[in-house]
Length: 323
Image (cartoon, rainbow, N blue to C red):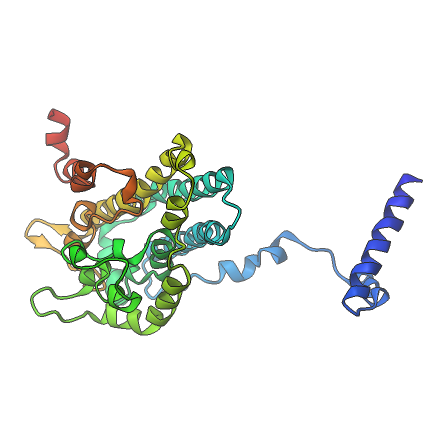
């Protein structure tokens, strides 16, 4: 009897729902009657997903390279999913804030640990051959990673460290964007000429990135933090979560890239150029960029030494062990 009453109650609610939108419940019930059961493979579009790996060469490891980057982009989408909720939130709820940042950190943790697939999971000889078929494409062209940065912190914090002192929040989004740090990573520093990799990226994504920067102006995650009451800003769990996010996004992630670059692009007589022509030795080290999402959380000394000990450890591991 209880089941019958429950079903009648649900039907009544459905009638009300469809009536409010001018729809006929009976027609929808007919559709439900003829509808097939949902399967796992249909729900996640498994066949489509598994068809998206299209190597450009015959080297087996290229498929690993493609899938790793596709998985990375899906995790970037998860990070953005949490960031957007946090940016849009108007409740000021501290627990919500902490939980969203915690989720972002959990995704970064997976990404950072997964880099062993890139560093140890491919043959260097294969990589150095199939990479030539990928020119001028580069992971540098990941627009989602740029979006993650824009949602996290205001543009003035993303200006290249050599130009940062000239700018503030009073400058226009367009002007700040012109001096964003990653552009120098794909620019010939001696001539100022942009690589084709950067030109392609700017043509496709600049309007969208500018639009996002304007949408989150004064509403980034950093702004959200600064707008909290003092006692909430000093909450140890929140401060720890935000510092971990800074460490994950702006130190650990770059260092994993450096580890991969050293594995595949270093040689005895100089370095091999990256596929997009990016000057990776200047672009990747976090101590060179000093990108910090939440500068209010650190002392001046911590900011000055940002990423230095981690880079020293990577470039001079033997020295680090002795010390």
